[in-house]
Each structure stands twice: as C-alpha cells, then as structure tokens.
Amino acid sequence: MRGGLKVVVVGIDSEPTRAFMEDIERLKYEVVLATWSESTIDVGERPVIATVIDFRALGVHAEQACRAVRQHRVLRKSPIIALIFEQEGPRLDLSIDVDDLILSPYRLSELAARLRLARWRLESKSSPEVLRAGGIALNPITYEVFVDRVPAELTLKEYQLLLFLMRSPGRVFTREELLDHVWGSDYYGGTRTVDVHIRRLRAKTERAGAFIETVRGVGYRFVPPAPEAV
Image 1: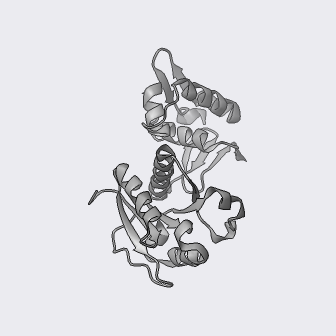
Image 2 (image 1 turned 30 degrees about the horizontal axis):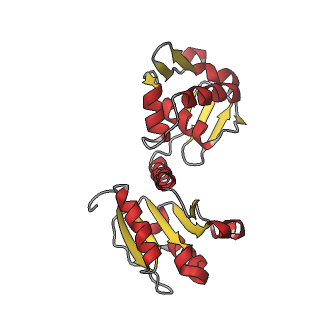
Image 3 (image 1 turned 90 degrees about the vertical axis):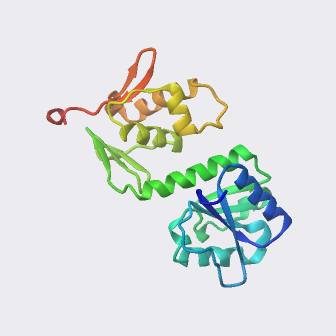
C-alpha cells in the first residue's frame, strides 16, 4: 500500500522478515524495510506510525539498532516495537527503551492491535493538552489519569475508553461504536465488554464516574459538570 500509513521494519532482507512485512501489508499499511548495516538506517523523510525492530533477524545487533532508532531524526518520533521470539521475551533488556513487544509466533489480530496502539500513541502526542472535567485530569502524553489529584490505576483499555469519551463530551456512543473505536473492528468479543469496562471505570474514578452516563437502550456518553459545579 503506497501513500498510506507507514510502518518501518528495521532488519535484514530475509524470508521471516519479508513474511512479517507481508502481514503488515495485509492490514493495509505501507511498509518499508530499513536494512540494518551496522550504523545506518535510510527510510526517507515521511513520518511513520511505528518502527518495528526485528530482533529475530538482527540478533546481537538488535540493541544497537534500538539506540540508532532513538537517535534517528525521523524514526525517533514514532513508537518502537520489538519483534522477538516468544522464548526470548523474558530475557529482553528493558533498558533499551522499546514501547511495545510483538512475540513471535503471533496472530494477525495481535499484530493489528499493536499497530493500532502505536498509531494511537503517535496521535496522542499531537494532542498534548490535558483533558479536565470536574475532578478528572487526563494527560494524553503520559497516559496518566488523576481524580482529585490522586492517580487512578486504570488498565490500558479503561484509559482508552475514558479518553475517547472525554474527547467528545455530550455525544452519545452506542456500545458497538465504542467497541469499534476502542477495541477495533477485528475484536471478536461482544458488547458486554464495554459494559464491564464502564463499570470498572466508574468504580476506579469514584464520584467522577458519575460523569459517564448510561443512555438507556443506546449506550454511553461523557457529560462534564457545569462550570459552576466544578
């Protein structure tokens, strides 16, 4: 896919890497191989939504590639994903500062979810303003949520659901719409998943959870308090 959302794979021209790139293309992304040659990465100028470092192919050079990506003028702006054999995952040195992992062998649905999350992370960086409503403060950059200045311990999906609702205050979303926007069209669970996460959000954000209203027979909406009630 040319001219679409771009993913860069840092590795070598090998059969496993080519198969991985074909899977990315099946998900309708443009994919570019940045061949690792000890110290250089050439990917052009256009921004990318994710940089995947193929640890399987690079072996001992993978950590060096990670450092180079973090210093790269174009790639450093994108989330970095490590593609690694499942059995090697527990031994991965987390100090190399990757944003996410894909364990091989992987399912196509998992790959889709990781790339969707990478895109969401990149888009969040372009919206740095903290969202506030009553006692809630949500920071799209740090993935932090505070209720009355106390941090709320949310799962990633709970956070994404709250962020999505807060970005469209007053708008009613059906359960199907929330499932599609937050979990993705490739998610096979039912709409009951949305109800469970809404219930958990309300419990974890205490009184601020009252801002998430149930619209009977339809879905949910986020209704911030009036200014005089803050």
